[in-house]
Amino acid sequence: MEFGVFYLPSIGNKQEISQGMAGRRTDLYQRMLWNLAEQAQYLDAHGYYGVAFTEHHFHIEGEEVSTNPILLDMFLGMQTKNLRVGQLGLVLPSQNPLRVAEDIAILDQATKGRAFAGFARGYQPRWVNTLGQHYDTLGDNATDPERYEALKKELYEEHFDIIIKAWTQPTFSHHGKHWQIPPPNTFWAAHEVTRQYGQGVDARGMLTEIGTVPETYQKPYPPLFQPFSFSESSVKWAARHNVVPVTIVCDPEICLGQFRACQAGAAEIGKTLPLGKGIGLAREVVVADTDEEALAIGRESGCFIWTKFFEPFGFNSALIRPGEDYKTIPNTFESMCERGLTLCGSPDTVARQIERILKQLPAEYFWLYVYNELVPQKAMMRSFELLTKKVLPHFSDKIS
Image 1 (spheres, rainbow, N blue to C red):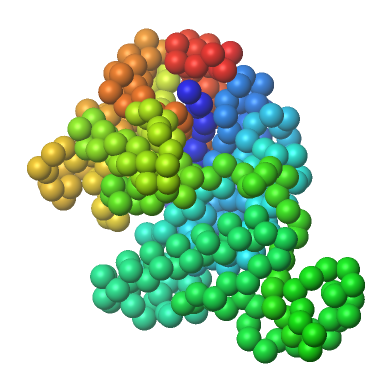
Image 2 (cartoon, rainbow, N blue to C red):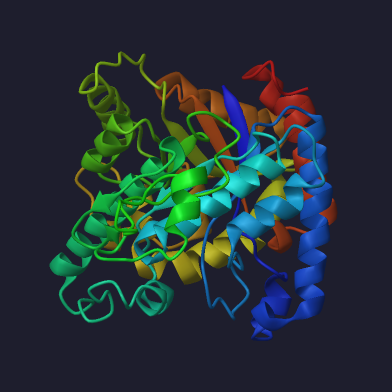
């Protein structure tokens, strides 16, 4: 089993965020960067799979200040030796897929094969609609939920196809609903040079194909993840495309359906996966020397963001049990802990919580998601130390 850390990079603690506009403060951003560096170096030395960042823009409030996860990956990649760096994930509907392919390839080359990539559809219209307004347009369709979600799915899947072509073919063309690559009737003035040293032009000097550079260091391309998969159809799609779905669904019965959907999707392309292979779980994890200390930290960290920022977007769907409506779930720290989203306590307590989860849901990847600056750096480092020495070695021989 692989254990990684998924950062939802807040800049500032609860008090600093409560003062307003924390996301714009240079002092808080600098503190976050170098605290992350210290954490990543510790994880690098102790066998963790990797670190990942989400993608969100315009977070002036101070939570999830992860405008460009690839640049954050590069920052940590340059200060570590073995730790993988990646995204959970880039929101493809609002991205330029060719730039994504190029940027991740550069990251993979710069880290000599330590990059991984994660792709998501996006759920925050403040920035998805703003950055993606030129795609049919996302903003104009926001008032039609069915069309809006269908459009995001179209863009996600077409952009994914373009990225894979860019990584696996020296030159390629693409003719889809939203992209024509290269655009028709594009004359290339340097066609003689390209004909001599490259490829992708016809006898008239018109472009027929393009190629991105550099190629990825890993072949055919870096490992791929898809957070956060709620529907079984999304899980199946990921498995069919050799992408690892990552789920935050907590109820064992519902989550087991996702695990089986992963197996079913893999079977559609001729792969036989044992239960849990090719799928990941994500849980907030806070460890301290005592249960009381850990609960106090958790109440002031993840709970502060989840109940105020995630709940309005419907994320309490991750907490539902069969037959429940997520809107009726108490939006409280106690609910997060009771339903298994937040694993919080002493090393013995957290080890038992993880053991109980993995007995029913033996995932290949376990992502520990943390709200880094909401947990003071000293407590964050202590949490990682206790996880490394007293918790995770029970579940992986890679952590030491």
